[in-house]
Length: 372
Image: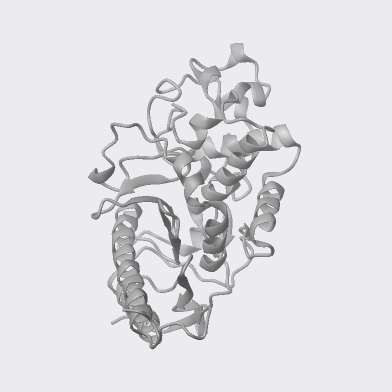
């Protein structure tokens, strides 16, 4: 067994209350450790919290050689950053400073006549739900290019015709979230990072959620185990350009805390904008609402989830429709097929969490003094 996999068998555990069921927490930790080893993930954080749920924060493996990862160290969260951008957009819709039905070209003050075919019809709601119809370029994603057109050359980007009519088709778009960030900046006169920071402080106070600092080397990110050409030394991105789509960092704990406060059950209902005919039980990626993918698990319970994937990062967050709990998972490696890995992690972690919650409920029912 490789050293990195052996390291993954050591976890730092933080349980919020002293009366937490130690057997349940130990089993949860053991099952997650096994999952990390099985998927060749050298280091990760996990957090679980909610109403009547014992808050648990875990850290596995090493941040760097000889230094264990802790629950306090922020990690890149890749596309989980879209939760932060989306939350600020929803807030701007609520206070009517930037309604979701605003047209993008009008907010950005772009000449409608110079925009590409259909571009004038794109609304912020279309961008938030990945239904803008923007053409996805061949090769590297727009936001991962050395010189992305968003934000510095938006007029050039929007001069091209749409691939599909705005609002008609789901197609995942990092560029769409970059455009949302620019719409917020233009309308409010504030940088996106400042708007996100204010949103977070208002909900949970101080936290480790912030734009990713590429100069900070306190956490090591690992090459894909199934990709011999993957080189961690090349993990450099234009983080200012991709801030709205994937440029933030956080601990799993702080992101989980934010989800509790930001997405109660009634707010999640408004995000379920997937078409009525969407086969939610057909697979976790089939249906996408606003910000989150929406699907029904094996028991028919509706779930809202989002994942993130960059070289060296696999990240997931999940909230059931009842919003009584959520969990967040962030790892320092992905496989070459990041979508497949994340789908496997989603199913496996959700199963582990369900077993843990049942264990806690059983413990509560069997404690002395409890009615059975």
